[in-house]
Image 1 (cartoon, helix red, strand yellow):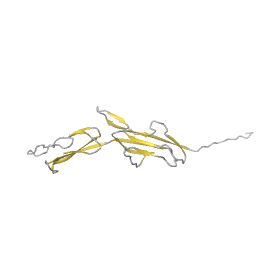
Image 2 (cartoon, helix red, strand yellow; image 1 turned 135 degrees about the vertical axis):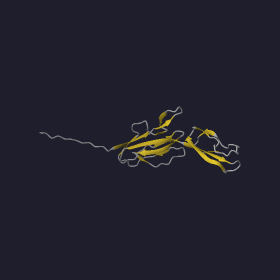
Image 3 (tube, helix red, strand yellow; image 1 turned 120 degrees about the vertical axis):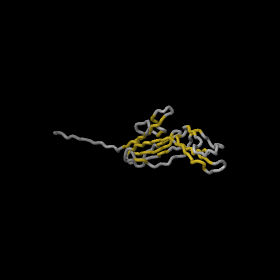
Image 4 (cartoon, one colour; image 1 turned 30 degrees about the vertical axis):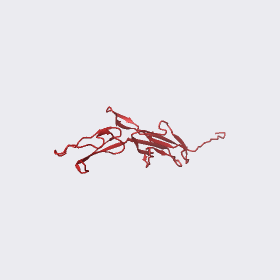
Length: 178
């Protein structure tokens, strides 16, 4: 080289991305086909990058996770690690911010269908003494259920009355049939 050459290198502070998504799960629809469903939503799930954060700064966008009716939040993972969380009364979760971000954050939520339970009791009339063992049925909230008389009732007894819904739809609350 016969003349001086200057080379400049320019640096900027690193930035990190926060991404969100819902992990779909399979379930059987009303005509018996297996389908993939989300069961809820998370802020930014349809965006390539939900937020970009400068190294060691705090994120500024809260992340809202909202289950659809009949679903609950089964788990939340941040960078493949399952986190503990407490749901609000409506089943939602809000992640407020990440503090001093030093890496990319990938938040994945998985929803599951709420289950309902029906407990069927078989008692001697006018008592809570069992004439047959209790029977429990579980199903997905809003699915239909039907109960029936026990098959092992002594021949000298007949059904007197049914208390509760012998058939109906599963709810989030446990239902009892006597």
